[in-house]
Length: 468
Image (cartoon, rainbow, N blue to C red; front, side, top):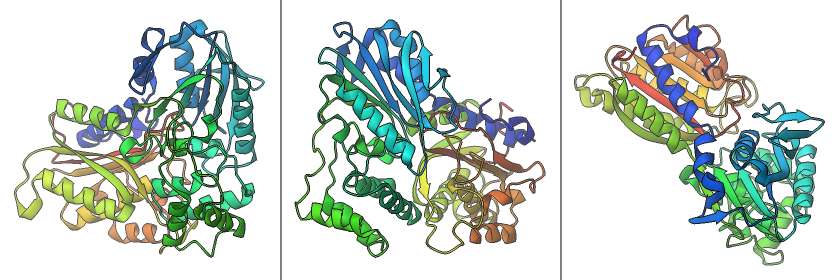
């Protein structure tokens, strides 16, 4: 089981079924299937091409992100002796993903992979060192070699090379953007124009052939947004980055050097990021795979199903989820429930810590807050379906905000509206799930999963259906 406290939470058929459906989504977030499809037969299938690896003098792996260790392990397992070495950059405290680490090096199937640990979600000095080591490794490659990049969510923080500004100013800018509730596309737009490697700049001068396989943690699976397009390219401009800063009201809060750089770029005094890819890139796994797995399991268990995408402001996303769940359950417009149903949603919401609440006052994250907000809406409407309604949401990476939880699950009938309001005002969603529900839900605990395909969740209505 990926959900470590599964047994403690599985009280009653609706809760058990909800957990089983959620498990299917978390299982589908593993990179294994995507890696096997992309590397079948000693070739790399990427960007609409099939690249045989037998003609190269050696294959080198460069992996960065939350799934870096797992992806690298699968690459070595599948490609065998073709892999000569490489660099793997993972978050501090992350699991090894099957790599037997020793003294910073990992032996995997005979390949020697340097394992570097860097800061996440906020970049630090280790992130800068990792970016320099990766860049140095790439400069040493020969024309007869091949580099396989393995990219996953979190890589933007793990590889950091500020360009024209210092690390402190870049960290401050990133923190302001995240705290403003800006969507990932806006955050990445600014990141790419403050970096010496993002937006395709890492591979601009690569001396050999290469390809990049990515696990998507962004809406629309846009390669230019995954890890800020480090191995791809960038369609945004300095002028757009400056517009993001102004639209979010951050112009006066940024360091002068950051604002000066964006203005200089917008005026054409700094070269733009690459606008076409140097190497082929492909998405091998996405949040849609997780949602599909959950829909399949729910249907097998006898639920009527529907899928929903959840992006943007968490309050607005909660309203959309609750409304769609009520419609599916047959409760819209006062209609009679139409039998057990399961709305599966996937995506990634944002929490604006600068608007209302008390930033930093409590513990929690977007998934736990989303569950609270959906619960509050459905409880006010009478539950959203007969026979009880269960709401759950979890990060596929196993991390939700500043808590130790991946997310939360709860029966809407356990909603204490006064307590929910208090927790939301105090940015303290995790405290609601800390033992107060007595068998009607609680925190979802997985620990770091070694992958990242955004978030998944569900609203299960009308009782337990079959398959309990």
